[in-house]
Image (cartoon, rainbow, N blue to C red):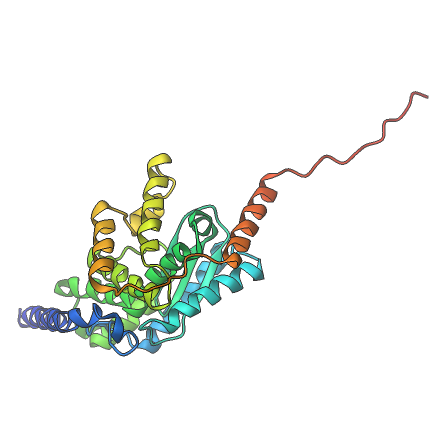
Length: 302
């Protein structure tokens, strides 16, 4: 009984500490001028950065084994360069890599340790470079705030009432045992509503800091919602992990109006983006066009 009360007390203290830290950091996260000089990753996390990066690398390898990765250096290099520009204008403290999956699905997700994946289908859905950058910026918000391992930490805390810590080596042992059991990719990882809201807020700021029009994020949300309305189930996976609602769109517009100082000029599109998008559509058409039948010789009657 004493052990149970001890675990419950530890959980309560940990949650109260996290809540206090979030309250103190809340206003700083809304200050775009502090980007790069603030901590947005929270305080309650069983995983060290080294553990998180190792886990993310392991999961990334599994994803690349199971998914069909895009074999087009021109496109992948462009997406990575676009992403790295956002990284330079973010709060991320670790190296980040961007990976492109050759799929008609419309999905983007972030693994622990800064491994970000996006489907070619979502690149095709975007209408300009700023919209594509808004997707990467949102995922970068997840990476900067370390949402994957913070979510895992919360899940572990929720189960402490039935997990004897002594059997798994205390807090550090809990984190290590969880990492050791992570054998499947976390492509279906669903972040809490709080974390999605936080990633939206951070992503908007990174987009703005990098010089892009932040309203492109709202435009991309609306494009996603419109696609799902026209073709129900077309974006089922993305909507399951990143639900696009009226509240989410309204909140993004409010954050833009209240938090982001207007600029005289914004980047909206580039010729390179248009070339990359055309390249993807051309590859898609080529894949759907069957090879023409080879001519055969008709033999005359003997």
